[in-house]
Image 1: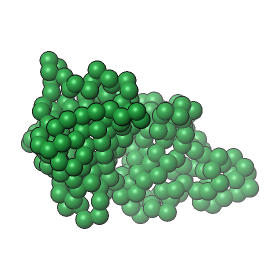
Image 2: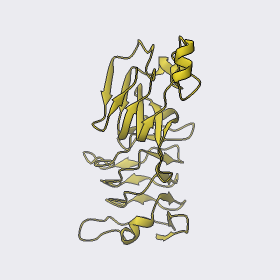
Image 3: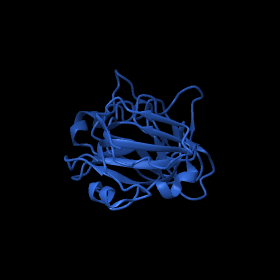
Length: 231
């Protein structure tokens, strides 16, 4: 198994066989270039992700994992504070050591998997059912604010930045003028698919009418980074 980092900041793991495990005394060789790594792609032929393989790669924003990966090591994304979701191309759930959480210490909240995926989790994290964007960040190198609905019936708001303001489902002229997005919140049409709301990561504000008329919601959890809550 080999690696290289392309000019776009993508760490590409390729070859055939197994990746070794890493630790504090035997660190992954790409860690020396962590400041240049924003994306990770694991190609066909690689059979596993070793322990602590991508630990503390805190600039990484997205990860694509090949369908040939059959096993996940422990703490593989520990310290990846800008990474909130991963994409897996296979339909067979990879295994991991019982009692060892592959995503311990990471911000990963969901996995995107193809149709026909034969499982309810990826590692120990839920699967993404719907997703989209719901806010921007002034720093273009940061993903901004996103939303997803997972298969555990949670609406999760995550990323870094401020949420958009929305119209209420019962819109008035005054509300229309206040909205930064000329429509109701995108998850409103999916409200029968979630019962709980979690705002995680570095989300600094909840937009106006973001959670309006979601009378089915039982719990709302808000990140410690929250600074402002709209109407």
